[in-house]
Image 1: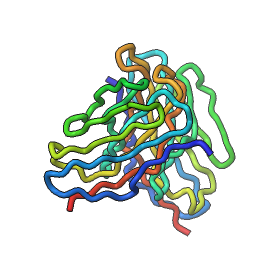
Image 2: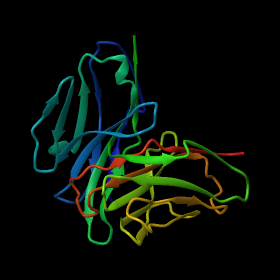
Image 3: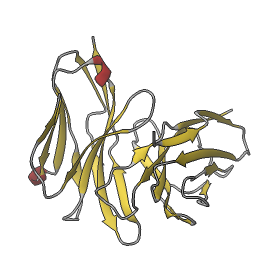
Amino acid sequence: AQKVTQAQTEISVVEKEDVTLDCVYETRDTTYYLFWYKQPPSGELVFLIRRNSFDEQNEISGRYSWNFQKSTSSFNFTITASQVVDSAVYFCALSEYKETSGSRLTFGEGTQLTVNP
Amino acid sequence: DGGITQSPKYLFRKEGQNVTLSCEQNLNHDAMYWYRQDPGQGLRLIYYSQIVNDFQKGDIAEGYSVSREKKESFPLTVTSAQKNPTAFYLCASSIDWAAVNQPQHFGDGTRLSIL
């Protein structure tokens, strides 16, 4: 069975600090996708990034960067120069396809990030 | 703008009562999903629908029921059989039930509490 672990329940930083959110996953499939979502206090999950299992290139988008390492089954997310608006719950998720159920997402428990001014 | 609309934002249930949470999407997506979110537990799948007039149980379907009579709509009923309904409920959709690379799009959620 697939599993996603976000070991950091809560992280608190001061504005402008860099912060890394960890994500470790388990799967038997060779083809899968990994996602990061942001959940601000309003409640809606906002899609941030997608990475497939064959693409291990790191990605940078503004202050956000992602490090995918298949050898350690990790897909970590770094925010550089954090801002108060980054305060949210962040979820890592694993997507797999099964013939009986189609595409399904398995979510980690989430990491509550608080950025203090 | 396309998106997913959930209503109401807050809902209170009396003991023994069934309540229905609404989810409407105008993204023309085939697949729709209902998740339950409890503090510290992430999101758990309740029901999902691959296409109109079809739906499947997720990991925690007991005490819940759904229907999918229209492509745009996927209402969730929390029945009196669900003994611990207090949670945040999120509806989501994706383009195609088989598209493993497509992200799911989420609504703003409904917070359900027991009176």
